Length: 282
Ligand code: HEM
Image (cartoon, rainbow, N blue to C red; front, top):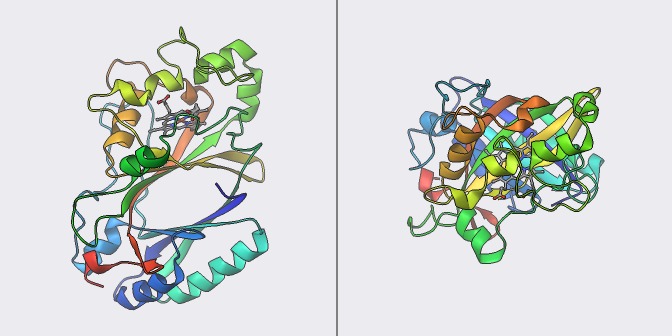
């Protein structure tokens, strides 16, 4: 994970063919310092389809609101110099004009070596190595698709003052891990976040690669939750359980945090250090 991140969301302006802008983007993305995701809005405009990319779902019957925000394009700039990220963002925004217009920007950062702003380590149970690749990257789907990924981006806003008012054991019970040693709490309540989302407890198992970063703007702060998968299955299975759709129990996280927006994107594969857009005819 980088020290700093900058998330750029774009919308597509009417009556302008986005092909030229996407071809320029192709050369600007190295997949490491700049990661790109294309939204369904853009694919529809191109008359293209990527099997597996669908609109953000509505969770009928959910006990918490999950606002969705379809976006045309998502860029995740990664680095360690805020000014450099700002300038890279300006260059990319210029390259994407006039088809795409910048709609929102959010700066994010690594906190305490990889913790959420609550102070809990985030990412412990991420699959590693080959298992991470298997969870996050599409395979056996054919050229132009193999090596691509689906990303769910979900902006959470915390109420850290409220979280701080819970006693330490209650905070641990919300997460399901002990803050002090990051050990999982075997008898944590059903609502504990890691009980809700235990990846191997789903049928089929629901592994994903989380790459979330904390953010803070003025008085507001939270987590930009970012999860890569070979499909959206794991994200949706876990979120359904967090929302109480299986057993009426909602995730403890909702006691101090809420979702502001959820967006889905397809991250094209890389070929020769460029985005490979052949699956959408570019
Ligand atoms: C406020 C937002 C969130 C915060 C602060 C948060 C924080 C955490 C923390 C502290 C852990 C324990 C350490 C670890 O294994 O990473 C964790 C685990 C996990 N979280 Fe979240 N999370 C959030 C949202 C979500 C969402 C929206 C999902 C999926 C829809 C999710 C999926 C997972 C998964 C799969 C695990 C590992 C569970 C396991 O297999 O043990 N999280 N999260």
